[in-house]
Structure formats: C-alpha cells, structure tokens
Image (cartoon, rainbow, N blue to C red; front, side, top):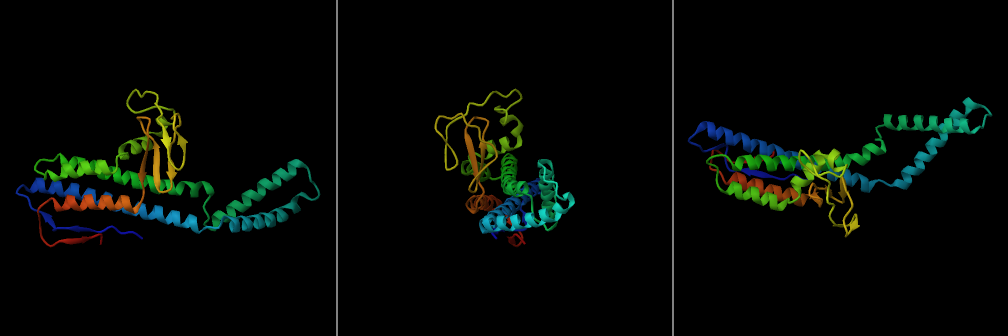
Length: 261
C-alpha cells in the first residue's frame, strides 16, 4: 500500500482577519481531502492490477468448464431423450444461468464488472486530481495568499498537461463518441495522430475513448489530440510535492502535524 505523507507546519493559519483565515483553511482542507482521495484511488487501482496479474486464466477456464459440464448433466434429465437443436440451445442457456448465478453467489464478479473496475478507479484518481486543481485555482485567486500559490498552480498544470482535457472528455463522452468537441455548439473533432504502445495512427483519424494503456488513462480530447493521465505512484508523488509546498507557503501557529492519521 502506498501512503503519501504530508506535514502540516502548524495547527492554524496566522491571520489578522479571522474570517479570511477561516476561508483559506477551508480551501486547504478541501485540497487535503482531494489529496487523500487520489491516494486511495491509486491504491485501489494498483490492487486491481495486482489481482489481474495473479490470476491464472487457464486454470480458471478448466474449472469453469468442468462445473458447466456437471450442471449440464444434471439438467439433461429434464429432457429425456429429446435431442433437438431447440432443446440443446435451451439446455445450454439454462446451464449458463445456473452456473453464473452460482458463481455470483460465491462472490465472483461478472467479466463486465471486472473489466470496468480498473476504469472506475482510474477515473476516481482523475477526478480527485482535477478537483485538487480546481481548488488550488480558487485558492490562488484569494486576496492575500502567497504568490507562490499561483506558481504552484502553474506547476500542477505543467506536470499534468492533459488533465483538464482528459477529464472533460470523461464527463462528456456522449459528445466525443459522436465525434464532437467542446462548447455549447461543438464542432466535429479534427482527430490528430496517435502513436503509443496501444495504437499507431500517424495520420490521425482514430477516436479513442476511455482507454487504459498500462497505468495511463486516456481519451481523445476536445482539440482532437489524444491525452493521458498516469495513475501511478510517480503522479501521486508529484501531487504530494505540490501540496506540501502549498502548505509550506503559509504562516502557521501551533504544533506541526503529521498526516494522514
């Protein structure tokens, strides 16, 4: 498990204006919450990847085939000697129903669930990162905050250059799937070249949505380019560094705190 640690330089912010200080503290708490959410999503994503690597598909396939055969033999008794095509189709259908319900009762996930699990965790990481970016943007515009906050917000944008574009596509798949960009009256996408481990389209023209390329979650963005956000400890480390510098940029009072709890 990866736990990314943060040290708060104090307990409360030093501020002559109590209301303003309270407002800044609230924004910092929201940043902290999104930081932990990203850390948790990362661990869930890595745990999913590790489970996939540990599964032996051949062994599972053989066990499933044997169990289906047992169920089929039990159900055959209902149909006596009738061997028509319709009967065999019905037998196959009933076997599948019994087998799948039995597996689900044991806690086994449908393949469709297993396939989507990794995407759910990757998007959770993406959304937490995006929310952190938005809160940091709001914080940077507050009166009296250190100038370093604006610089750090810019660094976040540089470290995760495709963050906003990928997140916008994730939330507007209904438009991208129709080949449309962003805005109230979106225009058709001008699909740009893509060359990575997953696809080679040097001449463009390929629409990619909701993709996992190793640890990288990506989609075609509104500008027609393919963008990615890496769901990895390296990305979380970059976020950790920026958040720690945000906290260090303020003046605090009271004993310092080690987080999370």
